[in-house]
Image 1 (cartoon, rainbow, N blue to C red):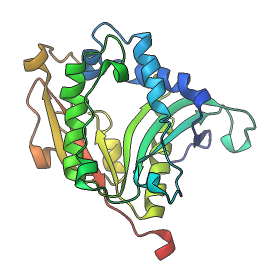
Image 2: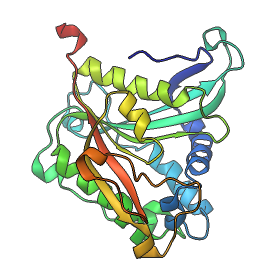
Image 3: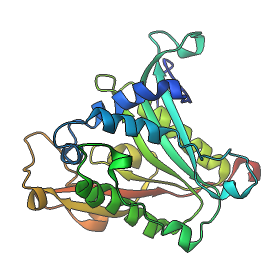
Length: 265
């Protein structure tokens, strides 16, 4: 991958102390996303932010090299990208957290019962003031479609990637994406994700291929008209699905094929 690396960006594993910064980045980055606005019609409540922080660090995430039954369960990987005014390699203090990524590592083939398991959206998970019907129509539908394609295959799934508003184009998102890709390549696993309209071409650049689309008819279902200057992904994945109609927001399910593990080279 011939990509430019910003020496002022450093990627590291996230800690619970980063939860508030990650939460602010997440809701700031998706503030103008139409689906986020529909999910939180009255703005994001403090309870929803608290529930989001809780979901960042699942208590049952097994160790990477665990050999017990817990190793069959997906493992959560959470990374942040820090920005430094000077070269990150020379920094001995924490930098400004400008982006984060959350991944799910499935090391073993899941059974059909495991990969078909569905978790309905609830207020206990999403928080007060969240429209659960919208969550199911968007997040739920996307997860179901992803599972139907993956069928429990061992893979590294990118669940979330977001950059702090005003700190885009520093290479933080690319650095986080590369970290996941490098891990998947070492393990000989494919990567999977669902691309937002604005993230689609970044993922194409890194070798992700179109698998399927989720077209949500926002205008017909909720009466919302696309604002001037906003992009709902009409021209994404046209080879497999054609151009998305007006009033539809398109999310693209993508997969990067597995590479040969380094140990087997």
